[in-house]
Amino acid sequence: MSSTSLPLRALQPAPARGARPLRGVSPGSARSILLTLLGEFVMPQGRPVWTSTLLQVLTGVGVAEKSARQAIARAAAAGWITSHREGRRACWALTPRGRQLIDDGAQRVLSMSQDSFRWDGRWLVLFVTLPESHRHVRLKLYRALSWAGFGNPTAGLWVSPHCERIDEARRIIEGMKLSQLTFSFVGPSLDFGATDRDLVDRSWDLEEVASRYQDLVDRFARLRPQSGDSVLFTHVQLVNAWQRMPFIDPGLPAALLPPRWTGRHAAARLESLRNEWRDAAHRRWNELVEVLPSR
Image 1 (cartoon, rainbow, N blue to C red):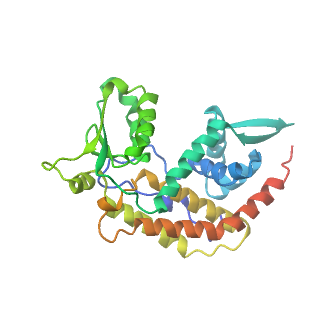
Image 2 (image 1 turned 180 degrees about the horizontal axis):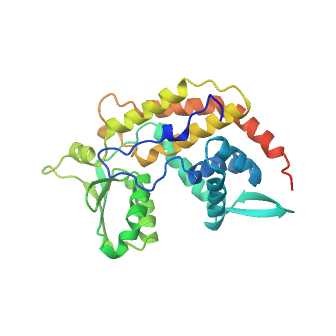
């Protein structure tokens, strides 16, 4: 690995104290980095990529080759990518399902650096009661709702100020066959009981979120990758780390953010660094794609 790139384990955002630990999310895993490569390079160019190219970059940022091969195989099994062969060489292209997955994720990530949306005071509320027979879906549900910007202030209760994400919430609940175990509501909080600020404090640790953003900025802003593998690997690490932030940053409106909130500014700084390294990283990627693997 280039001396200007960072070990991925150093970039793993810790779970916010106000939420349950993200067990099983595997930040910086082979799967998440593969999705970064597919979204950052393969999808925009619309051209297939050799297995050897994916392996070279995955191992270049610290993924073990066995894990890298497993990630590719699992992505194919999930229907995200499909292959064709030239002799013993395999080439991979995104499927419509894979493109949709990446496009949905990109929209969520881009929202992190945009101005706060105008909030009308309403909450999207889910109450999901999972019996022991559904224990196997707990983590999957947690990951999906966290990614969608929901907080979990108390057992079974999920809240989000993003009422425009009703369809996304419906897809999550129906996709996991939890409709009969879920109560859903939209509306404002009342003038007794916990306030909106209390609800935010119990659902998310925004100080921790801001700290994670600043940590990423501090780590990457000091780097000076120049060209070749150095800039490619550093760029991949930055994009991958940034793409994981929606798991802990709900993207709250200004009305619910603390004074002098720095998270959105930090996200914009990460976007600026991404743009700064993008052209050189893509040039190196294109060079690697052109290399015909040995049979």
